[in-house]
Image 1 (cartoon, rainbow, N blue to C red):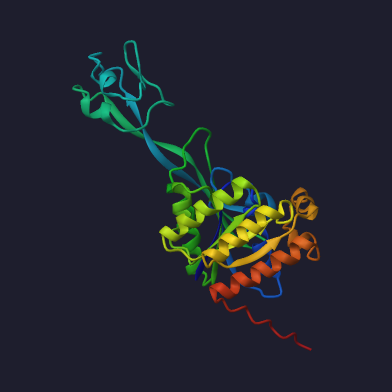
Image 2: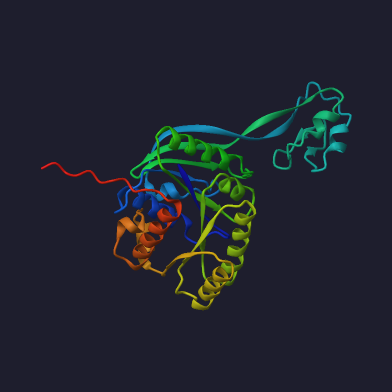
Length: 306
């Protein structure tokens, strides 16, 4: 089982549109491949909006812990307030904890002489297993104001990987989060190949370089694809030159195509909505390059009985 992770240095480059198109091509394309899908962008999980999956399971995700003060045991000594560096202990007796300011460090727990403070795990979000028309989908979402430390991304990928292994799926397609932070590192972990989606803008070129450096640091092979390549040809040429200088393979240049927007409005992958559009034709070429890079053999078509 191979893991393909779709990443970008910034948001809005078209990762989810590509992931949805790859899911469609894996299931119904000319080179069919059974695949499990994972939406690792848990801060803004949008893959389900295009795939319209049927929800099968929902599980709570426990994130960090929150300090809770027992007013019956609190003697008002103030040790917890002095120990807290985040000003999360609200003044006044009995003391209370500001749930937003609390970082869960437990310094107050160790300082309290009356053992009046305990740490309570908090439900930070949920992860889900769904069945889509293109294969199993694992996705999640966080509650408002909850931080994504990468634990939820790891959990989503772990569940997707186990499902792929149990079902003997040859491919796991991961729609990764943007940027280079902890969630991206979690999404990259264990990947066989990273597809970096870049856009031809000044910020896009800079952020593409950062995510490529992140992938190189963890020794994950990476390929580059330029989306909306014809909107700013000069930046597109900069990306091509950057890839040539560093020996990176540029596997596709997807043109700006209003069909992509129409497909999103209709809740369809662009390759399913209009497989003959300019963007679809280039995405199909990128998909074929991905299969070749991953050395995945297509599923042989069954000969129809006559």
